[in-house]
Image (cartoon, rainbow, N blue to C red; front, side, top):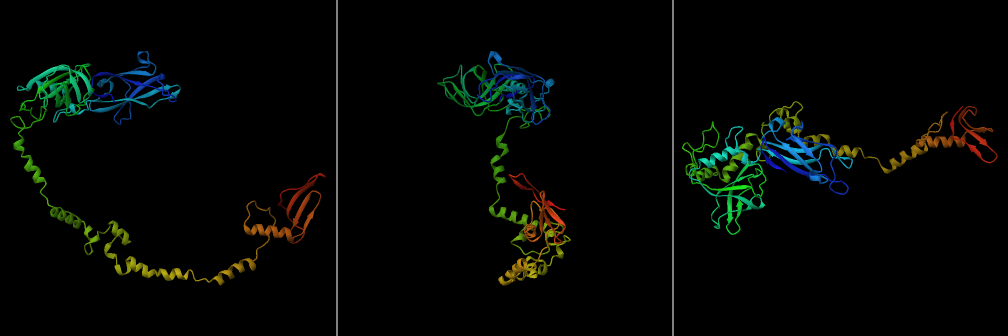
Length: 418
């Protein structure tokens, strides 16, 4: 993640391409090109991007310059993903590989409550510093060492642990001198000169040598600008009168419902849509015609046509007499089943196959028929043909070619006659 930037800024970042098999940094080839996707927009931005492969003569290290101007298609308040749109590594395409992400004016410090579109964070900070007539600049110095974005040491600072907690910290990016981040000091160690912020301002990536100004916050703020101009109007005369808000009484009033009150409200809501009739109340003619329930019980979607004595599940069960019906389907004795099987095998007859080739996938009756016919009917054989005759002993129903070379006698597959 590159971090949050501002529209109009030019910035740089690096990424590494590696061989898939070994993970070794490898040159990005194939006339590589980068593109940028804005949020979920399907049309990539190609302007304002300059790619340098093997940056500083280091194989696999790629440098990217981003000129984030409006003319190049960039906008404030958007997220951007930089990806490879043309390129290979050792002949393997890496198109679609995301190599960097950043946003423009999307961090919390870029948002002013009630501010008009295009409001400047830097201008806001400058105005606050000028307007705070009661404020005192406690120290102006630089960041010496950085442990994290909320913990760092000062190059110059007080030896008093109580000197800076509660102060406003304004950090200026040393590389641009334009970007500024504002945080609130929660703790300070006078021995190590270590500052701890309440939260990461998340405007840019703070680093050593960035300028930092600690400002004592006054007891009252100057009057806010009117709504039409921008800013946060918090009272007619300016300042924030917390007592006038009577927050405790307001919060208490929002939480004055008892368990009985809540239960009564739920009961009323359920009764309004007749859901209480599912379990706890007698069901009268309360189902609305055309509702899901009406569809389930009436062919005309009319609840009034439903008659419990004939249409209920119990009534339908009784009318069908299912037990008796099933019993009637299963009234055959073992002797009756044996008789049916004996009749099928010992009495029922089938016709013998006619003039046809024996099928490749015969039925049981076809197999038995062809075997019995070959056993029963007249057969003839010449030097070249074996024949199976019909019952008239003259018509050739099946035949097969035969041959004998004095070594091997061959009878070919049986086919249809004549």
